[in-house]
Image (cartoon, rainbow, N blue to C red; front, side, top):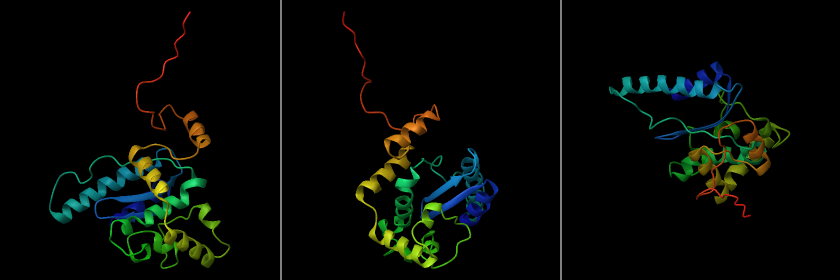
Length: 198
């Protein structure tokens, strides 16, 4: 039901879903909205309908989610494929599957040729992995099998949980110019002041 709701509302609100994984108590999405409001509208619609469905099914009432969803912006060139692998490896890290291909509730099977998932919209960067579907599938399978570095895992986790943009300095500076909202975490401690002595 959750997958059906994600698919329906991604189409309704023009959000391209590039990767996903459903876990026992949370899920991860990698998506590109076509409009500024597309992602929040999609998440709100999915959240409302899924809670209603789940409560009816389990004969319960009340909230289901611990709070608002968390999101961040990533530098696509640097982090997209790492983020996809991070998502696919979630069940492996949690001990739910021996490898990403053994877990049925993710987009991994689509990207390695095990099944067709109509909900998934491959990002243009995925197409650069090879000239044929087989070459792309093999390259992506190898990428996931090699895993991601501890640093990448930490950066992705920290970025999403904190809501901080993830990318190189130029990416972050350009992003900050487009919004009044802070996109990176400030350094701890009091701000430095420039003092002038006459």
